[in-house]
Image 1 (tube, one colour):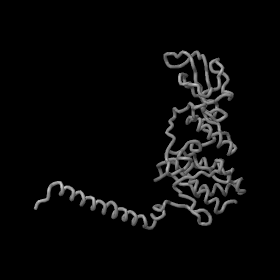
Image 2: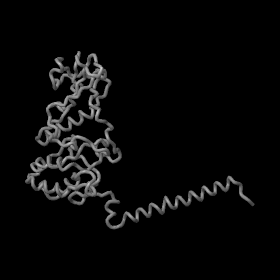
Image 3: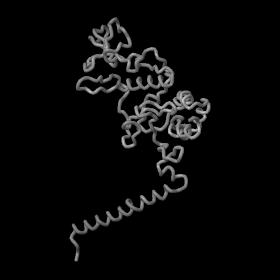
Image 4: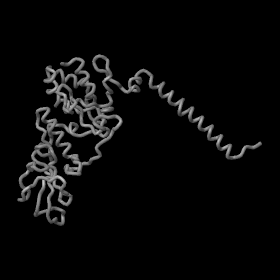
Length: 294
């Protein structure tokens, strides 16, 4: 007796389900697991875990960490990682970037009913100032004010054909909330005002001011910008060298010993030409805890 077409179709679907379950749900995972246990691959398949002194698992060498105290302040005896926008910082379940672009230079100042939001420029400026203060160097950067926000003016007035305002009627330092003193006193003969929280400055012409900061700041770029994943465990050799004197002082050891640990945890360009040399902060701090200073 010939089975109806609809029954044959259902039986074919069941057979396909069983075959695919056996292949994709059993055989393939077991094969991948078996390959992962081969010598040289087992550590990576297990998460590339690293251990602190005493054998306690301290994390993964592939995922960064924040070396701060409960209040978020940097711990002096540790090298600091780059900033992270993954959750509260280096959260693998919230890997992300800030999604802010280079034209994000005007802050949303906090006001009643309005939650403030710093621009990407102000975030960079604030981080640079904080790192400079921590390491005892100048944190000055182009387009940043001395108090660590974006050096951006909003210029109001009739615009010329090229979009410029040649005769300003009003000028506001957009990222310096009142009662802050504006970073410049005048712009084209017009007194610069501080920004009043809650005021809409969108109609003004945005004018970033470079200022007199050096084109090559003392604080490296990776110290003030987050990675795309928010989980990068690496910093640049330049940022590591900047932190070395502070770490050496906190541990009471010669800076040469700290720099030696930096060299141990430095890797070059992938395949000799891709990317840039980097230093793994997680492994570096663990090496220091094992044998360099207290």
